[in-house]
Length: 239
Ligand code: SF4
Image (tube, rainbow, N blue to C red; front, side, top):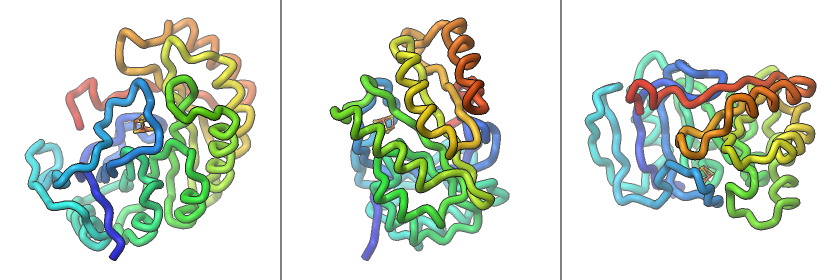
């Protein structure tokens, strides 16, 4: 039977990117194929999935892992008035078959590091929103840069914006992120995305100068609709 280990399911609002403020259920998968140095998400498998019964209550019920798609759909569908269901992690595409079997009332919003193209193809007709969170070297540990870029392009090609799906790209920028690396990736995927979001890293000691980000945005706007949007949910203590 197809099952997945989740770390948490809760209801909140999207805190990043062009859908900031939209009400979502969050389904957080464990496990990731990368190891970014700014990662702030525990990705280890857990024995239980914590489930927030009442949105915003910050009180959780423990549900034993692993969970079936039917059980997760039932838990998510208990929340009302959702814009969408965020599949986040970790790397949700590691569980592409599980995602394909979900039956949620609200459409699916995939947050992926875009390095697993064979899995992306499995969910392309299932997801309505794609937040392609590109991880640039040296912030991740996929040690072949050419292979990393090739897989990234293939994922965006499989999940590109269509009339039924929005696909955008989000890049976390630190003071060490070279502009050339960002421009190289964006040049390769700009035809597949509706917008590019530059997200200054939340950790203060790693943040880029505002002038650097504005200069970068000015140059990228020649290729693609580029916005600078920091993480917002942590500003008001939201999950
Ligand atoms: S891809 Fe995301 S979850 Fe995985 S290590 Fe990087 S930041 Fe963490």
